[in-house]
Image (cartoon, rainbow, N blue to C red; front, top):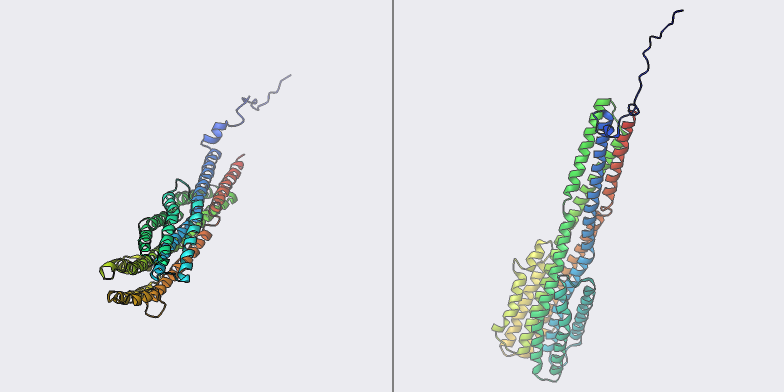
Length: 438
C-alpha cells in the first residue's frame, strides 16, 4: 500500500511577537503608518503650542487694553483733574484777595469746589495706588501738602478781612507752596500715570510675532501634508486635516483683524491722550498766569518788571513747541484758544497801564470784572475755551479706548480655542489615515 504525501509546505511556526510590530517600530519604522504617526504628532503639538502662545499673547494684550480703558486712564484723568483743580484754586484765591475785604461769593464758591474736587480725586487715587508704585511719593506730597496750603490761604483771608497787610505775606507763601511743591507733585503724578497708559498702548498694539509665525508655519505644514497624501494615495480630501487647516487660518485671521482694528483704535487713543495731557498743561499755564496777574496787584508793586510771570506763562502756552502745538499735532483744534489768549494778553496790557499810571482801583475792576474788555472777562473766556477743548479730547480718548476694548473682545481665548481645535483635528484626521493600514 502506497502512502500518498501532501505537496503543501508544512506550516511555519511563528514566534510570539512575529504577528505584530513592536511599539517602537510602529512609531519609528520606515513604513507609512509610522511616518503618518510622526507627522500627526508634530502637527498636533504645533497646534497646541500655537494655542498656548495665542492664549498668552491674547491675555497680555486684552489685559493691557483693559488697564488702558480702566485703571490707568482713570488715574491719568484723576491726576489731570488734581493738577487743574489746584491751579484753579490758587487762581481763585489770589483773585478773591485782590477784591480786598470780603471776597466775592462766586470766587469763594469756585475755590471751595476746586479744593473739594482735588481732595476727592486724591482720596480715590490713593485707594488705587500701591505703596511701591512710582506715583505713591508725589501722591503723599499732595495729600500732606494740601491742608497746609489751605491753612495759609485761610490765614491770608482772615487778615485781609481785617484790612491788615500781613495777609499778603501768607497769600504769597501759599502761592509759592502751590508753584514749588503741590503743582510739581501733581505734574509728576500725572506724568507717571500717562507713562503707564502709554506702556499699555504699546503692549496692546504690539505684533504677536510668535503666534503669527507658528500659525503660518502650521498652515504651510498642513498644506504640504495634504498635498503629499493626495499625490501618494490619489485622495483629495481628509476631513480632519482639512477642518484643522481651516481653523488655523481662522485663528490667524482673527489675530490679524484684531491687530489692525486694535492698532487703529489705540493710535487714536494715544493721540487723544497726548491732546488731553497737553490741554491740561495749557489750562494750568493759563491759571498760573492768572495767579501771577492777581499777585502783582495784591503786592501793588506796579511796573512791567514784575509782570514777567504772566508773560512767561502765555509765551509757553502759545509757543510752537508748547502745549497748544502738541495738542494741535494730536488732532485738537486750538485756533479758538490762541485767539482767546491774544484777547486776554491785550486786556492784561490795559490792566497794567491802569496800575502803572496809578489808577489802582480801575486795574482791580479790570482784574475781577466781567465787562467786555476787562482782564477778568478775557481770562474767563480763555479758561472756558481751554476747558472745552480738554473735554472734547477726553471724549475722544474714551471713545478710542472703548473701540480698542471692543477689538480685543474674546481675543484672549477665541484664537486659542481655534488652534486647540485644529490640533484635535490634525490628530483625528491623521489617526483615521493610520487606521486604514490595519
